[in-house]
Image 1 (cartoon, rainbow, N blue to C red):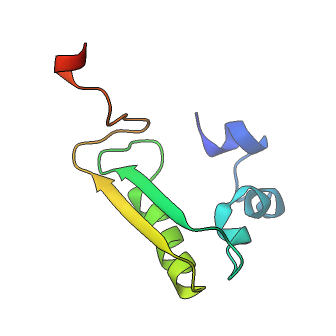
Image 2 (image 1 turned 30 degrees about the horizontal axis):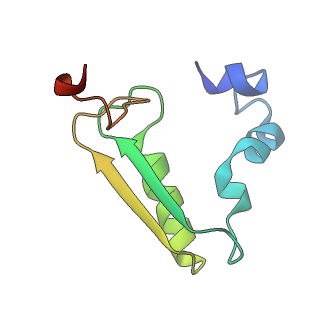
Length: 85
């Protein structure tokens, strides 16, 4: 899935919709605490986006932690272990 699949067109063509769809547009001192998990092998969403969101939340005074999953891809679940089938 591409960003254009979510908002109908390439974000650069419709920046208002792209901004409205971005969590960065809603960061404020009133935001709830965040725990962000992002795989460092995510081929769909760049890790840099989570790094920027984490920084923006902290700059707004919001408790935010970013955990980078080594070798994790998009949607990697940490509860999937070979032993558990």
